[in-house]
Length: 412
Image (cartoon, rainbow, N blue to C red; front, side, top):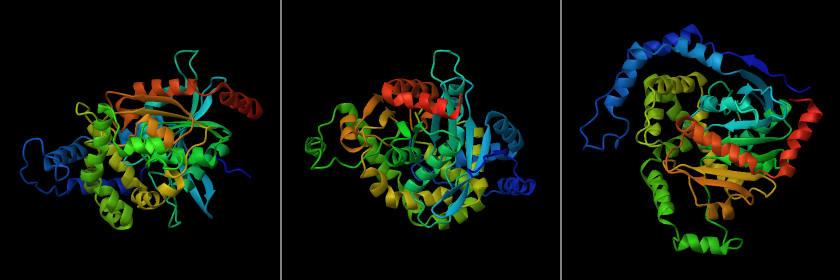
């Protein structure tokens, strides 16, 4: 018998909330040293930024009001999914459209994000324009993140997460689907496209990472890479990736080697978790973007509520296996591929490189002049337009599977 999803509401235990509140009230915000102007974040998040957030968390932030708003905004569920010999209780958002011909869309988040990133895309379920394509939206929490249980298997890889997501869509009656995501979500969706090409009709990503082209299959593309035959804009975007890998990648090494150890500190210190994720938010958006204090604190709260090291363990399991499971395998022409590239993101390759190393069937590619890593939050309207254009370019034959699937299941 197929597992039955259960409705889910956020209801943090009073003792848990009291513990967080007490830790924030008694937090020790250590002093920083003096930095040259413009280099205030060079050693990490400065004291002034942490103190401002701590003061807000202590004096103004109201988790119960946030909790109520989240419960009203998101239709949430949990369901048991069997994978790798264990049962995972997976948390997910599920908004079904009332429109006939609505298409299933799975939204895949990454770190330090969470399922809240799907909020601005939920209007795709009931678009104002009656002629616009509608979507059933599913946004799972990665196993080990927020309210999804943590896998106990020591090497729960990207491919296993992709399998969980695929099984979730099948459980919901969605035999065919499309996907959208960035960060780790982009790797998960690529793995779904590789492993389940008949079901995964297309994926649209806003974080692009690739290994060098094959010297056997794509010698000209590799030569172009070796001689650095890039446009000026491509050089700028790729230089940003190199800067990130050199100057900002320490968190990956820490979480990718000893995720359990660092998680003792992060899960035992609300302010520690706050500083850890806020510091990584800083350089991933346009300079004129301001992170709302409530958003930052809420994201920290969601990681605290997970109560496990899954958020960090993803880096150990994912980094060790991403090459063999995802990066070394090209997505077949059966799956439509689309990309939106934002200049403040830290995952990018030119289209010709992606054509050689990522996917055979690139139907949409757009490079924007503004925007960053958290596109669904920072520039949701742009991301929405790109996704709709991408979907419109999927072949008529492949889009027809949604009509057939709807008739077979009786889904609207």
